[in-house]
Image (cartoon, rainbow, N blue to C red; front, side, top):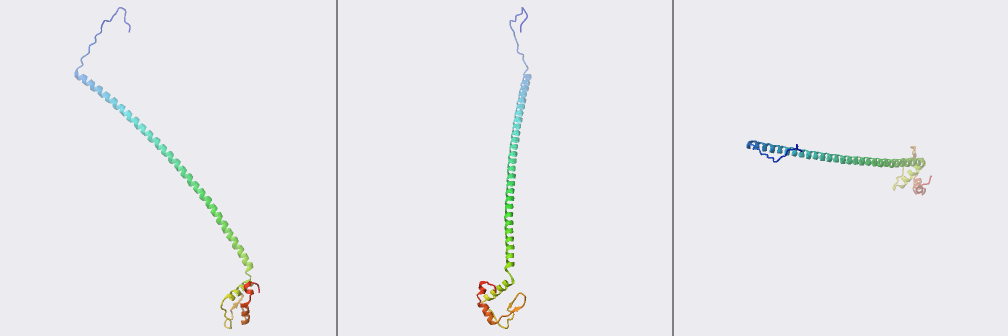
Amino acid sequence: TTMAPGLIIQAVRVTKPNIPETIRRNYELMESEKTKLLIAAQKQKVVEKEAETERKKALIEAEKIAQVAEITYGQKVMEKETEKRISEIEDAAFLAREKAKADAECYTAMKIAEANKLKLTPEYLQLMKYKAIASNSKIYFGKDIPNMFMDHAGTSTKFSEGQAEELKDESWLETGEDL
């Protein structure tokens, strides 16, 4: 702001223009409306920012819940798989015990059958029959009962009264010795 040489400003006078009242009021109304519009725009931006923040918070919370649910689900699946494996192991052990028990019972039954085959000879069975008859408290003798003693071939063995009494008193019946 340099001036040309030789010019000197001594005074400046500015007059304030007179604006008609209606124009001034319109201008003030327009300025207040403009201010209100700016305030409303700023409020809208603030509301949008708050809504965006809430959406982000909700999204983060939902992701967190989903991750927790996924971890919980994984733990439950692992627990079920562990329980299943434990159950399979217990079932296998039970099956092995039961099989061993059944094998032992089968072996015992086979050995008993073999022993009985050797033990239960016709002579031994006849001895047992005589012991059973001798242990009865009452034995009936006589001609009316001719088939009291039957051997396993179907032929009757007849004893006289004296022989039957001897048979009753014989001590070899109680010891189990052969005839």
